[in-house]
Length: 218
Image 1 (cartoon, rainbow, N blue to C red):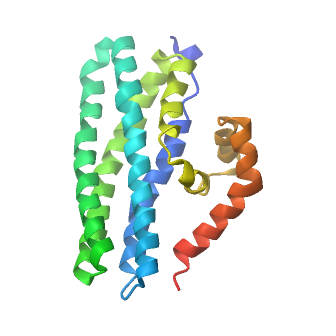
Image 2 (image 1 turned 90 degrees about the vertical axis):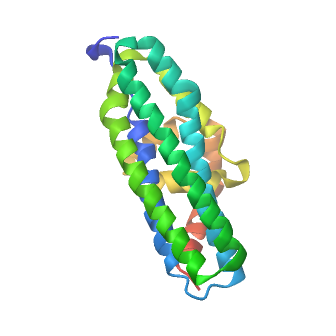
């Protein structure tokens, strides 16, 4: 596929914006809870868990769909593709450490556990930022030149399928909130019409209520 016929791939960087911000924000929210109620701990822990689940699903879609397709289409770039793909192992290890810290804080609400969790979220963020930089600067341009639009879209479809159904509005809110009007319109154009209508009629209100509860601690 020539540069002149490069496909549309901007959704990857758009999705990455959510991940680039999520874990530092979560660390700050956790640290702000010096003497949290049990309800607040549960709410925040569920939020952090969702952020980790979304990242895992995003990377799983790349492991299952993107890397094999890219390796088949661009064998001359195999070394680079494999290097970036292998970074998922480091990210996965950071996710696992964060999950363990999250479980401890959820169980105890303790100050020490809170600090370990905040630290693990920031460690995950550091590891992740470098990986996302490589994906956006190396992998995404290669995909734009070598994959078909259908092949590229299959990655996003696989990732969306991993979102917990009862968390769909929250996940959409996390994704759409930081976007410009143009990028928000573009991302909504990529989802089925029934989902788009549900978002506009119910999802926006649900997300706004959630976001207020998340950031305006009692």
